[in-house]
Amino acid sequence: MRKFLALAALLITSIAAINFSACNSNKTEPVANNKEDSLKKVLERGEYLAVHVAACVHCHSKRDFSKFSGPVIPGSEGGGGSSFDQRFGLPGIIYGRNITPDQETGIGSWTDADILRAVTQGISKNGDTLFPLMPYANFNHMAKEDLLDIIAYIRTLKPIKNKVPPRQLMVPIAMVYPGPALQKNIDGNVRPPATDPLKYGAYLTTFADCGTCHSPLTPKGPDLSRMYAGGYTFNEGTFKVNSANITPDSATGIGTWTEERFLNKFTPYREEKNYNFNPGTQNTMMPLSELAGMKDEDLKAIYAYLHSLNPISNKVEKYPK
Image (cartoon, rainbow, N blue to C red):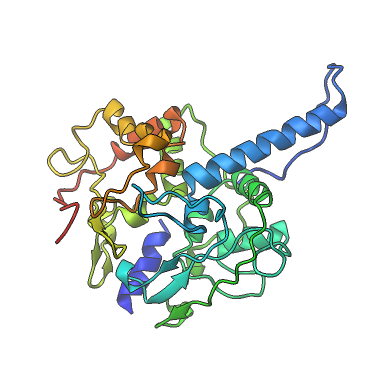
């Protein structure tokens, strides 16, 4: 059980309410246009975060691992059903929930407050406690305006009727719920300015939950003293891969990487031809086809933040036997 308590601890490591009122200015444009422009910006920001940063869509959809990086299968967006089990060091089987607006099997009947509580407190509409594989401990520290933008975007997904099986855990959820560490009120959370690359990069790295996948998992749980040092083993069945050391260690991490090299890890996958092939056993769990959609300046901020970390020597064999 200590393993799973440590997992929960690792996971503990936004958008003022949408404003559709017209701006008080001397412009002669109709008020409706201002509302439409505001809604468009909210949905664009929500889609950007949900698809390319927070990875909501890739966890809550079906992925095609016959292609490099397992891109989301078109038509399955938000429908849930992907399983996460002991192969990933989890205490049982957990399924990505259906987050489409379907009234019966999705979250169509949930209010914004219901969704916000689930993603920041880990409590569902019916009062069920969510397993912290859902990184609500991270989202608990995100700006409310960003979270509300994501919620607005999710509501635009096509409703999918898909009843996801219940989870099957081998430990009581109370053993892994990081309740005391969660803020009860997130209204004071602020998104750092993009002009401060270290703080903004830390914000984006937390939003993307990089720390969970890029930290070693030991028999006693994730090694919190070696966060970002890589070595978490993912066994998809058709391939097995270890996460990379992304600390600035020169020998075993990304210490010698230039900003350009870091960006080139992502940007090629903005073109479908670069991931639309079967890599066999040389695949990755990292959803590069979605993360590639991050803006260059956001990737640069993440690079700046990662290079500010303490270097950790940890040589990782990418594809273990």
